[in-house]
Image 1 (cartoon, rainbow, N blue to C red):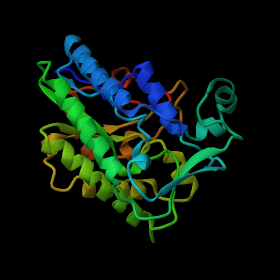
Image 2: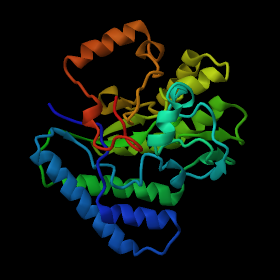
Image 3: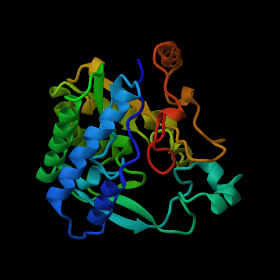
Image 4: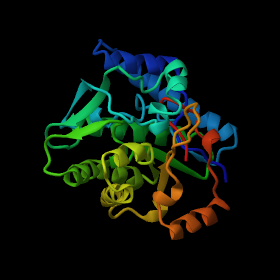
Length: 297
């Protein structure tokens, strides 16, 4: 069977609506909701027509994978000094710094970087819950028009709720991550309760390899803490209704400092993954939004 990792190029009108919302401009909400519903119907039809057996909603209901702080309370966004190394890894700071300075629109040195700072309890807002219900309803409605094997809705992992975040409210980083996981559990559960598969997108876990090590921390232990938080968020959800999208990033660059898979999972798990790849393979070409947003495993 054929599938992909979820995110697709949003129609221009949808992008314009999200840009207006981000700029706090007035938006014709009924027109936006109508346009969004129609766009999801169309993208699902296109996937089915292309022979995709397990489809998504294209993530059209979200402005990008950096959406969670718009659906939960407890965060404020601050333009802060860019951390080094950034999410592009050590090669961006050292060996290939000149290349990235000249060609890369991402992670510019010397520019302030948006940081999500936790300043209160992380819980879903009613507006956030309504947006998830809308996304599910739009997708389920679109699926009535096609014949496919399965359908999945992407949601972020606790670790990947933002590129650069900081906790000022909870006592520990672990407590913070588990609070984020509790909020995300609502989304995970809501998706599988309607018969859909939940895809957990972990876009940052591997990309902070160099930063975590630069802080003198044990990367494997840091990964284990984040996976424990994710499993907490997935508690009670059947394993066969979950997909996990682990991301190394497909931005244009050498990728010489990417973390080896063996440092993310155990050797036994690597063997299991290789075995699974005989049946289900996904690579960088299966993500239709490479670069600044979605990247593939």
